[in-house]
Length: 229
Ligand SMILES: [Zn+2]
Image (cartoon, rainbow, N blue to C red; front, side, top):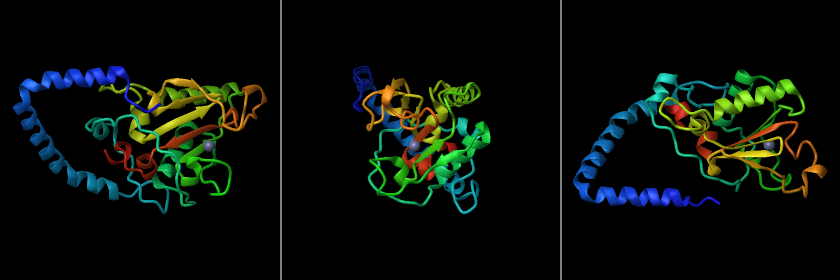
């Protein structure tokens, strides 16, 4: 499910073939990239300790649009399943929840979850957010689609889903559907593991009465380019 697509592999092969004749140029570019990273490093370190977000957390304040545009967009987050458990809310998770309610309204109905409760879930690692947006309500549907449209919009550099990638969104589930980073955020049908059919699945497990957002570890820690530039 998470392997590279054939088109990606052939693209890489083409890139390798075309680069054989210009190895010297590649070396020069690599040296320049290292030098550029060294020059940029102090700025990033400063941004990471800048105050911001909710009281008691140390996530950097979101960068300005201009600063963000200067840094490359991250690749699509890979799937990082829950393996541990913590009740401490991660700073990036808090920042993501705050921008959800601040920008789109409604309320957060869950972030952390007891270690002993149910199956595998990023909620147990404070990397997931349940946001009260009901698909049965026309106004709330509009709010969700405004959120999704902005999340997956292509930015001025041509990067699809730039906001999702910069904020470390791993997947969104809502109204029997999932938009997952490892599928390039293409919409897929969703059925909870505890359900055998949509018709007999509860509105909550179908995510009809709320949206679920899972973040990568970098997103949950607030170390993605959305925060650090
Ligand atoms: Zn959830």
